[in-house]
Image (cartoon, rainbow over all chains, first blue to last red; front, top):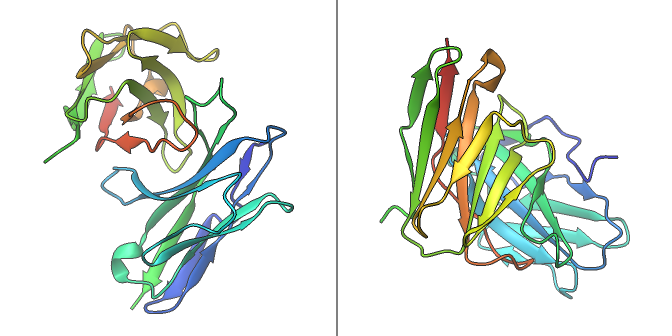
Length: 116
Length: 114
């Protein structure tokens, strides 16, 4: 079974609107961390936001927020007020446990296109 | 103020000809990673170093080797590149291996095998 599932290969959003990118995960480890990265066409992966499994509140970083629903094992990324520069591939990733914490498992990504 | 630097950005090699990709970091991070990313796919971890401790992924082909001569530098050696090794190779670092440690990625090296 895939550890990280991103069910939307591609998404479109109108400039200035909000968009939600889905991510579900699978783990039996009570300790884990969830990350979202942005990868523009230039190739560099850019860290956006982090949510720890024990965090009580949903993470927010500027226009990015993470809708963390632990019981559903979902960690959706919400981008508010989309900008043309948000067009990129977005990856959800997870780290599990303490002994395995050096490694991140990535989802297959969602390509976001922001339309003017 | 580049933090993770990868050279070259583009590398062309011939089938079977050894090639080395390099990564350097100015962050003084303990952990360095190498990922392989094929077109429109998830990055796949090849190996990582925690300080000098080398950790190979079970499914990383023997064709791929790595060296970390000091904290700042890490190299990816592909001994006999095949056509299937054409990909983007991403280097990343993190301060430590804790759950919340952010990985900082370099711009990647795009490898083409002729």
